[in-house]
Length: 464
Image 1 (cartoon, one colour):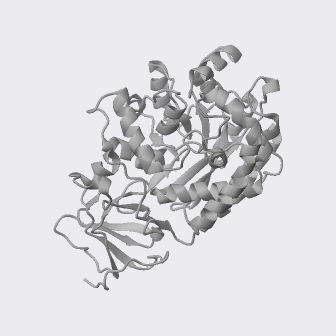
Image 2 (cartoon, rainbow, N blue to C red):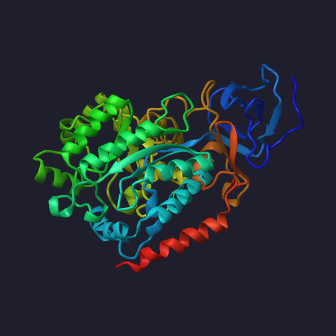
Image 3 (cartoon, rainbow, N blue to C red):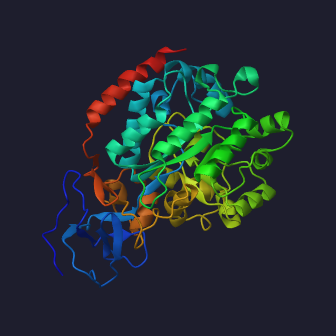
């Protein structure tokens, strides 16, 4: 076996062209990889089992003796612009509909390209520091001047080196028209669909290992028209991309659908042509038994957002029943004004805790929570190349140390990450390249980012 001295490939250095053995971690979230994994050309080339060494020669060794290694976490639902209104005095201690009524006018008046770029940069950085390697942001807010929101997000994801599903959201039903969207943040249907086509044409990469993909995402039944939902479904089918929307998040939404349509949200989803496996839903809390079966049969995914669901007192997602019925279940941090952070490993812990409260301690394990944050999330986004540590998958890996006091005495390293409350990754690799080193993002000045984001966020506190 040919190896060099152990290296940590400093300051974002890649592994492309090299075979790198990630050697002897404390634990790995994969079977048959007790002695680590070999990475080559951005993919996982080999799993090294107990007592074994790599079959083929390696060029470098990364000593992972301090690390617990998991697949890179995958975030399936977020609203990154909301980092600008965390713990906003107008919105704290409210449920979803009054929370939206308080914040919509503030967002519509203040979100612009400069602060949106900083919000995206901050949220993506936070996510990556928590161990996230793929992000999806449900960007539905389009006040005047923010027409190029998807281009901004593509640029920011590219600079950081994180994978991203650009989720082109939309609003077109205002309060005056029977919805709840603020008139300063909506677009007309034709404008929305034209930009969806533009974004797909420019950024949607369906190939293996893609860094950018596109999904189409009208916001929710209570702020978009049926025409937009139907035409979005037709466009997504024609362009072979996924679709996303909020559904059944609160009982208020159930009441809205009954009052305006005469039926429940899943019936609405079926009527507009969204009951298929290209769809994943945010929250998906208030489904009855029959609806769970129908969603599972159609292969509709659900992004479980445990932190936001608790903050807004929205309810408890039926994760186990949905999975058993056939629905992929992934994790989302949701917006940083309903979660108030962008930390996906924290969401893994919250998913375990709320899952045990919903079911029991035997029914929901730390491995369930990890599955939702990795392979389940990948399935929601329609990706087969990420989400697990297996030969041929993309080398997207998160490395957590157990050096902090919170982990002292922990017996099971993987369980400890969840039960003892890991909140940051020590290292993160995307496509075989280091993007987090020693807990910090490569090439990002965190102090400057905090200052600049805080500077532009002040305007959101000055708006009543």
